[in-house]
Length: 170
View 1 (cartoon, one colour):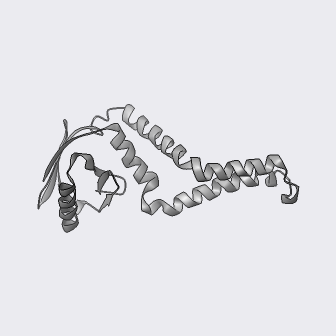
View 2: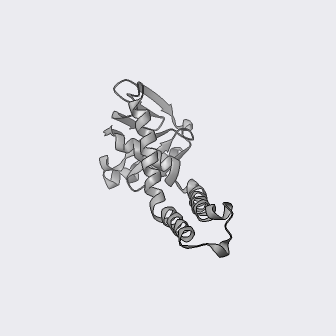
View 3: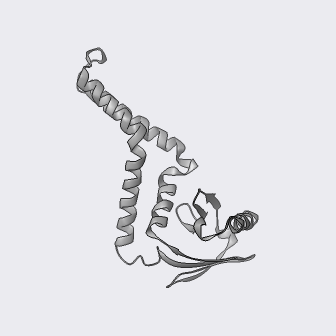
């Protein structure tokens, strides 16, 4: 199966967001981050010498703001931070292979990967795992590197066939 597509900056952002934040492996990381954020904001006055029984409007407001941030805004703030980091990578130096035209040929023996400046042959044993989101397939070759396949360039049948082929080879 051969796929031709343009990998956009948005695709690159989504991969980084998945890898750094939204993957199932990061579930406890997300929970701990939110708890720490709430705890820090709620207990700042306590560490400044206030007793919990003496908390007033200001202290409880700070705690409620921490809770609201942890519950509602933390995800979007995190996405913004990850996008900012990815922008630095995309805009700094010669990173011309990170986005642009891709041709990926999945066959029985190898995966052939081609960009405007690179040709690669990758043996199936080099891949660690396949991860899927609603919009993407990520075929990881290492902990933080993956072939990004946007599903929008494939039909539902092609997505199913590709997943089946990859699962057989992994």
